Image (cartoon, rainbow, N blue to C red; front, side, top):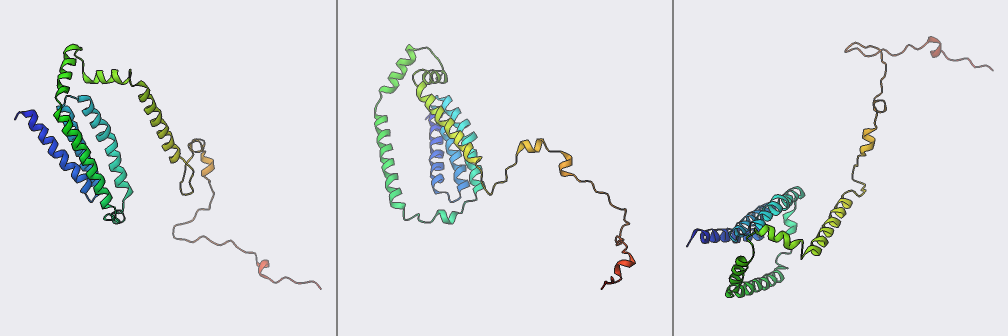
Length: 224
């Protein structure tokens, strides 16, 4: 067994273990961390397949952005695990049947793929005929020539989703305390600061009450 085969088995075992722990972990934060470990091992497998562009995208996009976002969202939501676990055994038969169906389909695809031996010959023939270029450049040329329209449609869908997320965030709610930036810029000191003149008072001495004239306390005579 060479070094490449050893790394393949190492990445595969760790990937399977991390994937199993993603499903069985009781803490959502631990599940997200195991998912990040699974993505890192998958990027190692892409490197072994000489697909360095896909491995780099997997690390930068999923590990660097999406998984970190998931981790912060899960930590900030403070999920109640007791309510999430309710009804687990009720939906277990349906989930088990769907999982078994997916496992059978994956096994059928993998077994049929391993039996064929024409793909390496075709790839070797293409490599001998075509120029020696990196797979990143070949993928970029393929995406922006033959698959230009799907790329533009996907970009438009992502743009609409981003605008919708911003619109949902900026909606007016009763419990939100929005601050107007224009009002903060145009505020003046005279609008918030009031200067009042007061008499000097010694520390510990109560201010004297104003003197009331003696005539004010005398009862007034009524004229008949």
